[in-house]
Amino acid sequence: MLADLVRRCRTCCRYRPERTVSLATLHELVDLARLTASAANKQPLRYLLSCAAERNALVFPHLRWAAYLNDWGGPSPAERPAAYIILLGDREISPQVRWDDAIAAYTIMLGAAERGLGACIFASIARDALRAALAIPERYEILLTVALGEPAETVVIDEVGPDGGIRYWRDAAQVHHVPKRRLEDVIVDFG
Image 1 (cartoon, rainbow, N blue to C red):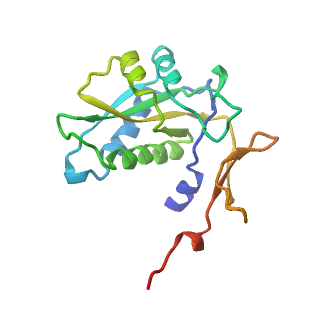
Image 2: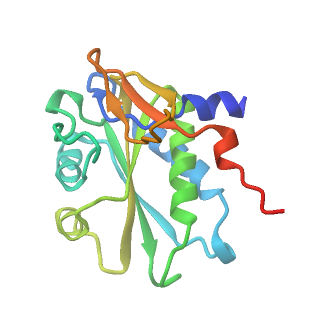
Image 3: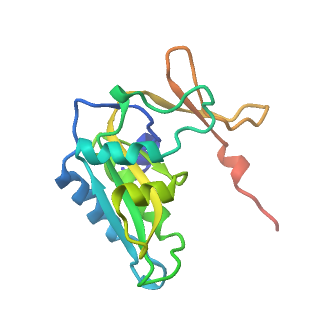
């Protein structure tokens, strides 16, 4: 059921390196993403895939991990993602991509969750450095990166408390807590 999948689909920042993610799995996830809505149906998204250790090592240092966890610099080498999908906008098809990338990235994340994988969508990317590291032509705008792998952490949803704090955090057992607003707090009525 979709509701269960959405509840299970949490951002994952630590992974089990012993489980690889195959190129075939990345193809399956992109196949889902390519079917999603596209503004004016232009379909300008392109996907750069990485599941080899050498290429993954080129991607990892250009991503900014978990901004609210100030004392954590990202996953240790033993907890890094097994794969990445880099979403690119083909400027020759459309000079600007609006929303297509977010829809596609979340679809990839849902597909990953359905397969028992964890994922993390990155918009905070050192784009110039990543472009240079992977020799990405200027024709392609680097939009988002999705990290993928078998989760090595537990992520739970908490209700936003009375203080209104939305910052995610980890407890002493390293369980990752993500506060979410209540349904009645997000529905508005101006009538």
